[in-house]
Length: 106
Image (cartoon, rainbow, N blue to C red):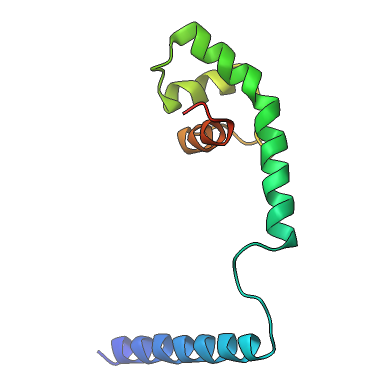
């Protein structure tokens, strides 16, 4: 019981400190969230990467049809050893969905 109260108190204090810190940053004029130089750079990188994967995804769609699932597409990309944005990682359905949306294929 005491542990639960201590835990709740900690969470409350952390939330208060976070809100106070964000208020101080905002008062200093720090832009919080939204578009900035780093996010613009990340968007450019993602678009460039998606363009490199487009031929592979289009080949898989041509081979399996337009109704091929994201899971099957990810498996096919892994079989073809197509690199992900993070080198050495495997493709997953959500990554395929994001790339296809970025390319206007879904």
